[in-house]
Length: 266
Image (cartoon, rainbow, N blue to C red; front, side, top):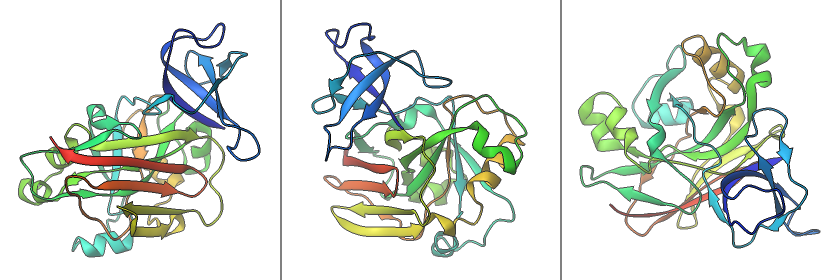
């Protein structure tokens, strides 16, 4: 199931809320047209879907979730750790991004004047579905709502100069998420791919993660309580690089979808 957020007009299906709403996307766009079935309330539990649908085409798609917090995992691919000149961490290396960094598909990534080296980082994002603490790795699937694409945009020069990562990863627009939350299991052999202006810059199987999703969920929840809608960024493969005004950057994850954003000066 694909769960997304939209800005719906007031003349939508009978019984559907208007404004910013969660919805399920139905149809494959090939054998049947893609339509949106709005839900009342939120998807953290049994979704309460309305009877009617509206065409997906032309709707404004929002970030699929607005988390209370975004937990990033750094240097979780051996190739990326190597290109950063770092050794692999003994435990998942955590950092936080503010929820004000979140933007959705099609939104602009703004280049701040404080940085001269803003880089893309294509990542799989885990969306938490229930309040949880001290989750065992074997039980991680029980607290995961689904997966989405993420771009952990980073001001690399500020990351180096500051010696810690809050400013480098915390600018507004530095956490594109989307296009939706895929609640189905990830397919075997799924890859994460990052492209800039159509050129592949990053590509690696999710099996290359140093710490897999269950281990990450267990580690993070051993430290902090996660709330429904919180997001964990699982790390980026080798190939990160700079973004410039006018670039188009896309994150694609097999079985999930593609997230595309334009880059412009702030």
